[in-house]
Length: 230
Image (tube, rainbow, N blue to C red):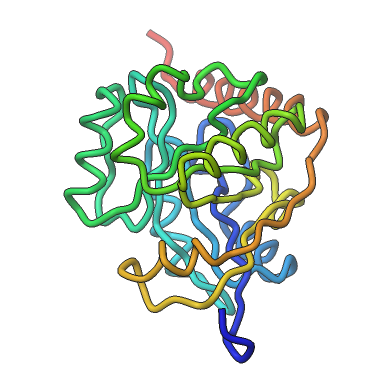
């Protein structure tokens, strides 16, 4: 990294109202990104890119990487630089192939998490390793700091590029974790810049998980009430 090279802050994992477990309006998300001093945000809603596309349209003072946190049969995988959504419930191999087929980048989120049901299992992680582009080594929503340390050690031992993100489901969480890295022109040189990055982050605490359960319930109840009777 050159001394005169411009560094930017990239939050690589965020959610908005487009996710089933978040009620953060996109306009509020955009304000929070600017307030947190984030230069580039990866919009990675669950199983959709609609929120990312809309956030990109309203971006002012920051850039948006269109992404998706995809529920594969082997656990959650993040695709970045997507042009179209990747269908859920495919195998890990097929999910990765569909990300790569459109020139996207594969990131494995929270690989050793103890507080998530759908994180990738170790057997699947080891099996998919040759096709993975980056591993999330710091997720601000981990309940146990040791889970991030295990991810960082796994990436270091296998020379995997490290990623970091707030995994924000509410606006106040945005920027809780990010990578400070050289600026990049696009997807072609993103991984090279990311490899030179420095991870920054703090854990969000356990309260955010209770709020997410509340938000998921509120959205579920809202959908149920909107279904016509009979």
